[in-house]
Image 1: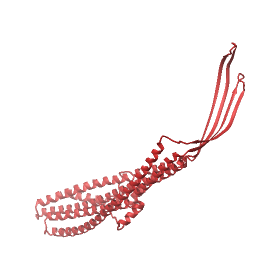
Image 2 (image 1 turned 30 degrees about the vertical axis):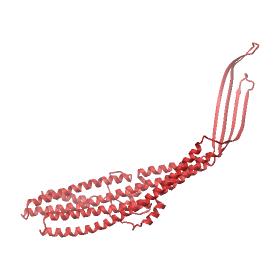
Image 3 (image 1 turned 90 degrees about the vertical axis):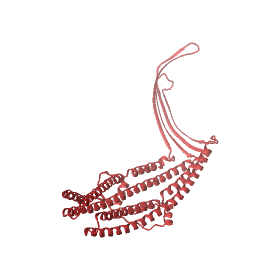
Image 4 (image 1 turned 60 degrees about the vertical axis):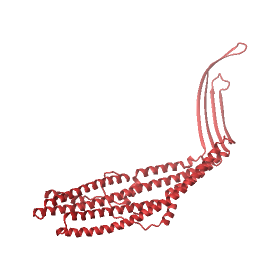
Length: 438
C-alpha cells in the first residue's frame, strides 16, 4: 500500500512539473485570432466584396462599348415568270458578305440616380467594414473569455493538485500512526477516501482544462491538439466611470455606428427613388462596315457601305402608374425606421453600460472579499495543520480546514476571472476592446 501511494505521489509530482511548453499570452492569442480565426477571415472577404461593389466599374459612370462582326454566304437558284409567260432563271447565284460594327452608349443624365447609387455603394462598403469590426470584436471577446477560462481551470487544477498532495501526506501520516499503534484503521480508511475524492476532482479538472485548450485552439485557428500554458496573473486597467464610458460608447460603439450608417443609406434610397421622377438622357454612337461580293448573276459585283451614326435619346416616364411614388414613400418610412432603431440602440446602450458597470464593480468587490477570505482560511489551515501534527485536532477537523481553504482558493480564482470578463464586456460596449493592451 505504501508503494502504491508513493507511485501516485511521484506521478502527481511529475504531472505538476510537466514538460516545457510554450506559454501563450492573451496578446498572442488575439494576434493569432486576427490572422487565423475563420469568422474573421470570412468577414474580411465580405469587406473585399463590398469594396469591389463600390468600385467605379460598378457605378454606371463608365460608357458601354460593344463590337460585333459577321460573315455570310449564299448560293441561290431562282425562276421568275413574267406576265407574258416568259421565264427567266438564275442558277447557283453566289454571294459573299461580311459586316462589322462598334458602338458606344453612355447615359449623360439619369436624374442623379447613378450618383446617389454610387455614394450608397461607398457607404455600403463603410458599413461592411463596421460589420467586420463587430465580428472581430465578438471573436476577440470569445478568445479572451476562453483564454481566461483556460487560466481559471489551470489555477483550479493547480489548487486541486496541492490539495491532493496534502491529502497524500495525511494518508502517509495515518499509515505510520496506525503501524505504531497511535490510531485506528478507520483514520487510514478516511484518509484513503479523501485521497480518492481529491484524485477524481483533479482528473475532472484536467479533462475540462484539456477541452478548454482545444476550444481556444479552434478559436485562434490552429491545430486543436497543440498543448500550451497560459498566464494566470492578470491586472485590471482602471476604475471606470459611467459618464465617461457612455461618452466613449456613443462615439466608438459599433452598433451605434452601424445604426448611423443605416440612416445615411436610407436617405440615399429616398434620393435614388426620387431620381425616377426626372428624365434620362443618353448618347449613342456606332460605326458600321458592310461588304458583299456577288457573281455575274447580280447587278452589282461588289457592294460596300460604311458610316458613322450618332444620336441622343431622351426618355421620361411622365406617369408610371404610381410605382415611383410608392417606392419613395416606402423609402421614407424605412428612413424613419432607421432613426427609431438608432434611438432604441442608444437607449439600450445606456442600460447595458449601467448594468455592465454595476456587474464589474460588484465583481471587484467580490474579488477583494475572496482575497481576504483566502488569507483567513490559509491562516486557519496552517494553524489547524500544526495542531493536527500535535494531535490536538482530529482528522475530520483537519479535513474541514483543508476543504475550506480549497473552496476559498477556487472561489477567488472564479471571482478573479469573472471580474476580468465583466471588464471585457465594459470595454466592448464602450468601443475600446481593440484599443486595450491586456
